[in-house]
Length: 76
Image 1 (cartoon, helix red, strand yellow):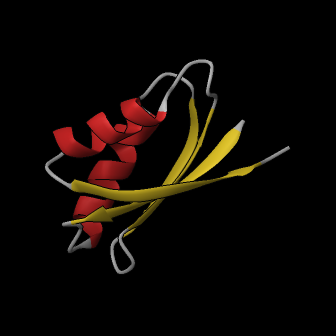
Image 2: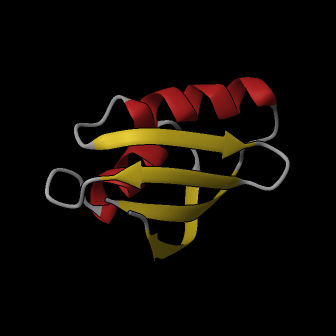
């Protein structure tokens, strides 16, 4: 499993953060997703064999937000 920390612009309220969080969690291979409106950060725990960074980017853009940057950290 990987934890991806993604910077997203356009999340201006908690409702939109929940909407994006739900969309990310609905992807195959995503174990967890947490989105914070104030910082514009989405932290996603996912299985790289089932979900790619491109899949996450597409889900973000389909919700009307802009993907800005990402970085990864390994989890056990």
